[in-house]
Image (cartoon, rainbow, N blue to C red; front, top):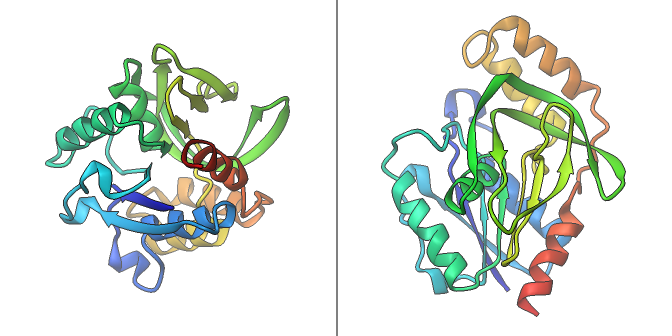
Length: 228
């Protein structure tokens, strides 16, 4: 089973010089629930071209520092890629921005909503409360036709989606470890975020009890169900 992670998040060497890129975090998290998969990271924002649709069995679309409303060289090709992947029946899983761009492409809407949410947040999914790491200001505000909400929170009603074709997505970041993000925030304090906001977020990440394999099993089961 070959899975490609489309990494859409800028890596900042001045703050992450000894840390993995975000796409690599996703690859490591993926194999927790799908150990039989060969996972390849395509660093799209660094200029790597999107793969041919048939090159991989399934795709994971990462978070990003951009929004669906931004104009970047890779945004339009990505939109076309997602449509082609859907038409080819390729399973897709979206994370944060990936969740938002999938919803936007497939007939819903994502937009900036209120203040940025950074830290640990609780969601309701499958009749139980789960905690996840978040860093976003945009949200899905309109559910695409044929999609169903499978996780929600008071501040984020559309926290995860399942589609009537092989696609699923989440607003939270299951690939984030608390230590990784806390260290990034400490290094970029006062630059990426204000000192007050960064300090408040670091406190939450330092106290986090989010599971390292959050949603990994569900994601692994999702790909197996459509690729077995």
